[in-house]
Image (cartoon, rainbow, N blue to C red; front, side, top):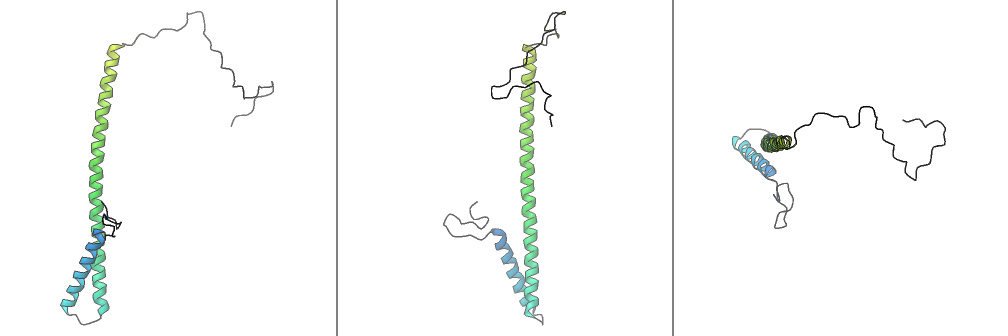
Length: 140
């Protein structure tokens, strides 16, 4: 992947990105073709036509590259989705095995019917100041 975006390649020299190279080639071919037509007129017209054709080639090449990358991403997303589905199926199988090993028991009360079990709140941490009996501060 070295040099694909104009970064230095393995030899240390900067490489031209393939998309830019293709655009330059298309523009050069367009310029040569406009010279072969022998249109009477400005040299500016020939350069303008070659720039427009080269720019069109650049835009088309960018669109093709984008479409290829999007297709690769969609393929990867499908594979990832398939893997997730397989993992969920394994989890579902494991949950079924756990249900077989530990069947659900009917709900029972933790305390005898006449007795209510209460929990004491944990004491506040030592660094927290003790309340003084005044109104509690308003919570936001």
